Length: 281
Image 1: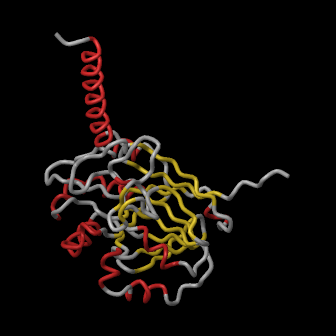
Image 2: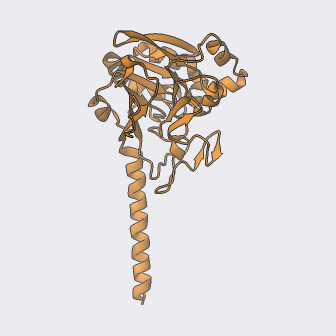
Image 3: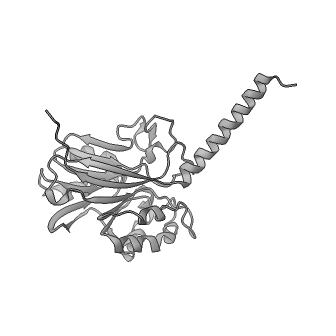
């Protein structure tokens, strides 16, 4: 017969296993709306309170259906701008096709911009044509000027970091060569490491993804490993101030090669630009 201690240990182990399975299920299928206030000291007045919906790393794996239903939550929100920072698919181009109606609805709600990720490299031409057919502007090493609250503001977007490295960062350097060193701009990049290439600029706000927040996490521990950066990465997830620039990294929505997220729910970002609060003396 089993002793009470062994029975308790077995029951505890079974409970832990059940909770772990439940956490994996929740982490894969239950998106979290994350509201992020970004205090920027030299924020232009017309951008104060601007809300940007940020989606990244959807990694839809099915050619026939949407894997993670983020859209009910997305369309309940109020936002002025939408940015999608790459990796819509897991492997094949046609995995993005089930997202057509949602993308078209998004682009009708607000100006919507997309930059490609490393999972789009093999089918970038198809992806660009598809996104543009949905009303989404693809920023493939280019910048656009958007009118916001009666004033113009620049949004910059680059091809994926690995593409930039392969080209010796020439596309990015060419894009930025005439950019003023000061002045607030949004900068979209799938991978966050690009912020180190912007060290000479001031008040650029980089929005990115790619890291998945480590995908598998432990309670109260931030990103453990990130692709391209290894263990305990310099840029894991969340908000950073890097010299005089700002960086926000989404934990993303889907999963990459292994379809597991642990203590790491899919993230829908709602980024609000604010002025820093004044400290009372």
